[in-house]
Length: 289
Image (cartoon, rainbow, N blue to C red; front, side, top):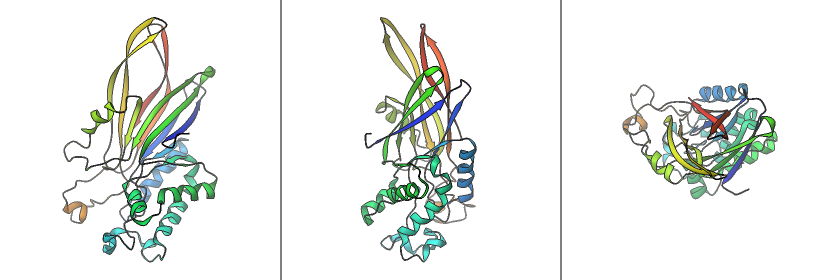
């Protein structure tokens, strides 16, 4: 498999079947403002829905290291890590214990800017270490994703039919935009992701789904036509609630607004359509918060 591609296989034997996927990012799990109850609520819902989980990075916050200038701030890390002599090891241990009951749900945990900063400055890969620990601890087969890459969905459907689609993920960049909610990036991302049915980003702590439609010409056995295909752009939200009541703190002082907590759900189901007599056996994709 290509190093930036993760393959996900699903089986939908009946036309009424569906596959749920939890698209999440920016848990900042070791930050005191991370809402573990909300995170666990979504993970338990993933169990009930028999869902696959994709994490697009910044699972760790990791701002309490000895060389980090933010270390002096008492709210930079949770209590269980504050007195640890092996701070980064402590992050991995506690995260592995928290996610172990859900490890078999995760197909991928990717890198975010917090993890790549630690890799650059501290020479340890927190994402890779967590994935290796979870796989060893539970027998799961989680892939350590990159900062950006592709997920190839292979759906085996009824009567031997197979359909596929591509999901592109990119942790994110920039500040998102106070007025645009990072939506201005959509047209640019669409231009260099022509094959993707879904484009997923995190980083800006916004949560939304935006559908754009593309015109695709095709030729099939001397039959020519044009079909319209949707491309979905997703922002995954966050589990870090740092606005509070708006009374103060770093987030409030820099003028940042409250952010939506949680993740996004993708529902994959059958969608058999015909165009000029040609069956287009494509999955139906739906998104909810």
